[in-house]
Image 1 (cartoon, rainbow, N blue to C red):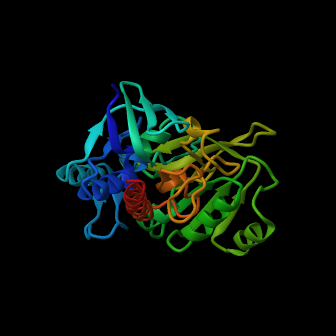
Image 2 (image 1 turned 45 degrees about the horizontal axis):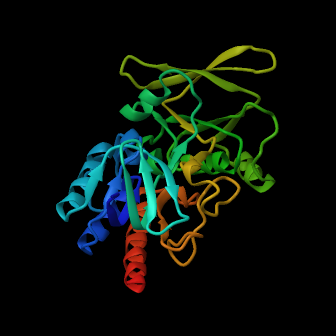
Length: 311
């Protein structure tokens, strides 16, 4: 017979591991199915300076190792693999992964979101190594005081990131492949008024240029209409073309918005009673490790109280 767990946590990262910590300390013996990227997006990050408690900063992978170990200390069980199906039509719920099937009285979803990237060579390597590519200005802008930076994108997020980066950078060049922006007029106007922001449109990044130190030294771009190529010197590239929530496996089972973010109410409750969500899979506004961890705490406490009400 398939094992029945009080709580199964789908996904890891700050939200999943914090949910596991709180559920374990509540003696719920949670099972965490880590997913395809154990530790989440922070394993693609080098230095983290804005998480409380790490006064000297911490490497993203090391931070997630600490979260994981703390949850395990209190009895959380970790399983490798990716969940391929969640059956919410029966109780207990049925969670199917690549390697196992378990039944769960309550489920916490913390599968996160993935930054959309340009898909060009060296992009992921430079992001993981701290070489100057990022998808989060709030996280990494402070590492570039007085530097020239590039932002790629044409929506509100790109405009917000460009404006934010001018707090540190000497110059920000915003690239967009079209002459017309998707961003709201007010956000475009705000960026255009900023004397530190220059625009390259229409233009798309063809290559990230790397210096002898293994870090970004510029970009090679091209005009998509004329195919003319040119280079722009910079020391950082911020990709702001959006995020995609890792929620495909739950589509048609839980209420979501038009972008696929799981909708939550009354804290972490989803449209299915007994299923909770935390972190970037349901948060498209903040997308920070500290907010994800807080939401993981909320989800575990909500699940604990819900289970008590059911028993």
